[in-house]
Length: 215
View (cartoon, helix red, strand yellow):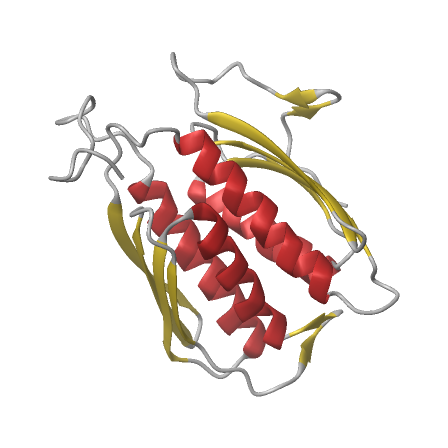
């Protein structure tokens, strides 16, 4: 497990929190997994990730660092079978935590997109914090595993996260050759898009960004 500076026993460092911090804690327990996810949307990209799947930890660390969302996630799953349940349920727990931290979504920017280059790879993510969960996934891998993680599980995580967070998310890798770069650019693109979408709009900080009046 690798942890960024600023994490302490018992929770997050709140010294940089906003006047009305947007935080949430979600616990999910099934016969297959036990997961706790803590988030602070107004953080600085601090993380403590422990899932037992090394490459997956690395991806979630990238998500935290580049979104500036503090993430503390601990997962215990049936890894003696495979990583599927751990990865999918981590997406559910983290998505719910972000949804809960957003609250009534007053003042958020809502829409954002980001295009991230990683060496020879280029990936774009577009986010709408809409309350309508939809994932469009146009990403292909050319090898079955990266480290200790099956590459087919990346889509499973993004789908679970999207459904639980209640967002519309489009992820597309325009081109790329290295599978590590493809996977990492997807998480970094999501991170940068989320960072912009969950931000408070200084021009309308007290308004829901919808003509419906709610999201």
